[in-house]
Image (cartoon, rainbow, N blue to C red; front, side, top):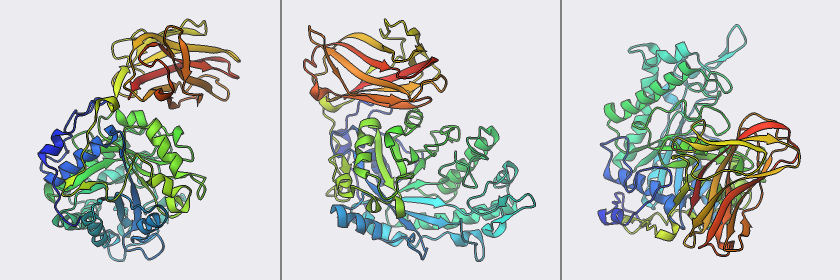
Length: 536
């Protein structure tokens, strides 16, 4: 369709009925900016509800490049074109970066590194029925000219990829300081581009100051996995300052604000500026095996829609299977609203199974977002609604163990995927041992297709190559056994165990539900946590 303004009718909203499994608002999701345009609010609400569909529940995306860059990383339609050539599909979200400041020096001022010439193609993508995302690798305003150089100690300062001190970062918030003047000049230039999109009626998924828990950008952590609370608070203040400047000073009302830490670093929520300043929480994840992604539970605990804001392979460039990634997202991280792969060597078109990924029945592409002038409807029928069977908010909820290897089990607040509590069990580790955590049940799951549970292993204890876990059911008067297959969990890792209920006989007569563990080579002791036993 080619209408610039597209409205979601009140009737469409009335068709949405969500029983959220993580405590999110039931029917309508409200943007952080109360003055947002109606179209922006409608799109946000639509994105938030996507995971609750039974099909077409995961919005696709792609990064088109950096504006006004002359090499192969420069923004163009080529990423979308290449995906279309392989998959006969185009991404639902097309993304551009207004800034690329890590390997260039500003000709006049830092704001000269901001460029929004990609807007014309983004507007065209919107008018064709797509959505738009803007990222910003913002130039460094601390040192005039964004210049990177080495100080007397041999440490790089200036430029995008060098750490600035807390004292220097604080200068950005001091009125009339040279650093703040440069900072606001950068924001002014970014705001010009965002305003141009708003004038064209285009809502923007806006992702600033990303990967802040990593130590590679000037706004980020001061060192590897740093717990520097001063730095974290300065980041929060800077993010809020940016939000306030764009929302109140520049009166931009077309932005959907995204907070996206790095999946491989700690402190994912420590930099969080608060629910009043963020609309979507996500992770930037470069992994060869997405089932090992950490941080999903932490981000869901913020009670915002979740996305994979930037994804791609780690070491396996050129051989990464994007179709397998989609399957893992749906099985392990089912509350994901959208995914945006990076371009270049991380691109789906430079890796494997592009067509299968973009044609997966869960994936929403360009042409599937709108139905005429209205956003495509989201009707969540009862058999596909998620039901929380056990969340341990009221205690152990009948769970326990008869194994001598389990020395105790309690509902605790040490860790939880969302909410306040999970079930903890202390384990005495022995070689080639087996034990279980289970609950006697009387469940009818005949209207559900899948069962899942989150399993976490404490960061301490000698578990050798890891514990093996199986989510299982016993059904009917003969207590017939069904399990979802073996899953390996290692120290400090959270995994999702899945059981396909379509393989289960007598699923209207569940007698026992549990997790069966085997130790392999292990010794000493450790602790296990489980949370959010879901049926959907």
